[in-house]
Amino acid sequence: MNKNNQNTIKNQSQESAGIKVDSLTKKYKTEEGSETVFENLSFNIDSGDFVTLIGRSGSGKSTTLNIISQILEPTSGTVEFVDAEGKKKETTLGHVFQEPHLLPWKTARENIEFVHKNNPNYSDEIAENVLDMVGLADHYDKYPSKLSGGQNQRVGIARALSVDPDVLLMDEPFSSLDEITAEEMRGEMGRLHMDLGKTVFFVTHDLAEAVQLSDRILMLGDGHIYDDIKVPFDRPRNMGSDEIGEFNAEVVRRFNDL
Image 1 (cartoon, rainbow, N blue to C red):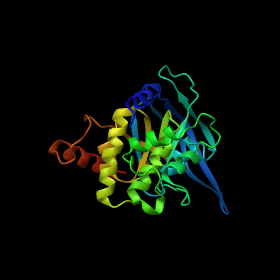
Image 2 (cartoon, helix red, strand yellow):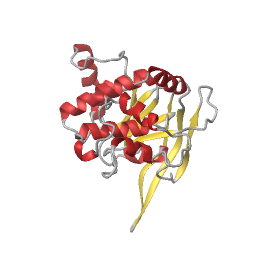
Image 3 (cartoon, one colour):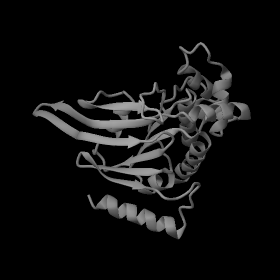
């Protein structure tokens, strides 16, 4: 990747937004009345932090992320994006889904171009820079069918980064990959976070993945955050070390306490 462009992205990302979630409630209408996913959910994420939300299936992890991303409306409560002083900040969001949802008739470069169709300042250099960033410098003009599952997900991450988001939202992005590829992608994601300093809100069901990547781990269950764990290790992290292994076991124990 062009070093000057990487520095530009990094400098912009030093102003990444924090997230304030206050008294968030989500209910769905049912034939019997309504179903409450969670009620009065509150937490804060500081600018530049990598925070992971974990919980069992059906606990509301993806619903929380989709409300933050404005895909869903909350029943009540608020989500605000703020600067380092806590003031509201106009914020650009990047979203990485469990599946990359690439357009099969477009190349990697064209899939990124597609999200910029209303951007008069777009150029191919934007796509090429972010594809370089995720290790796809030789794959600009390949179609999704010619890329592996991990490579397609890299295109999805590059697409999200191409808008230079203040906040990167990631919904179980590695869960559909084989473990070898997923581990490689975790390493890449950790490197990108160190390089760019983006605020990341990450959803997963994989506790070890949360320990490997996160500054904090939020545990969601019974409709509320029942644990907020600071991960006290520098990056990159050796997941085979005894110290991190003991910490990971403690996270599993606290998760099972619910």
